Image 1 (spheres, rainbow over the protein chains, first blue to last red):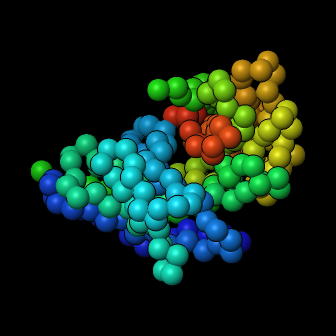
Image 2 (cartoon, rainbow over the protein chains, first blue to last red):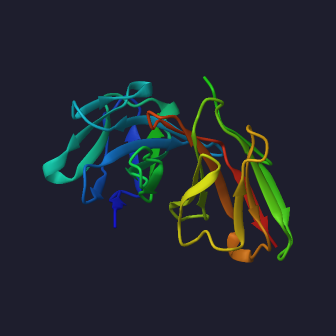
Length: 118
Length: 112
């Protein structure tokens, strides 16, 4: 069965510093990978996704993620963090339905809470 | 940007009562989902729905749960007889055929 591990429960960075959030997955086939962000009291907002092709994926809000098959990783990065980036970040792997047309059954990691110091 | 909307945002119910959580998915989407997040735990898949039928469900989605798309726009999750352990944030999601999955803001259910 697929699984997702986010090793860091809580990360604190200073505003303007670079950020990397780690994500490791376990999945037997080609993974479909997602990063979501959840601000307090809000829903899950899609930051970016990887299905195939270029292993460096650009997302919204200046985020990017790199798929590394050899390391089973899909780490999220941002070169300069803003105070508004403080939130909880979730990595997820999608698995296909029986017809292979939908990958919406997502398995989530436990999330990483990001705190940004001014 | 189109969005998935959910109602109610928060509901408190007594144990044993029936609850219906409502969702309006994005209009041209084909696949619909319910997830839940118990406080302090991971977001968990409950069920997926396509072409007016359940396409997949998790072990959590037992006979107490049901889903319905009653009128072509709404997508509902019903819990027939709520238990304390059903207290959670319930997320509705929808996706198009490009598998971009959008989540709603969630419905927080508290069972007392």
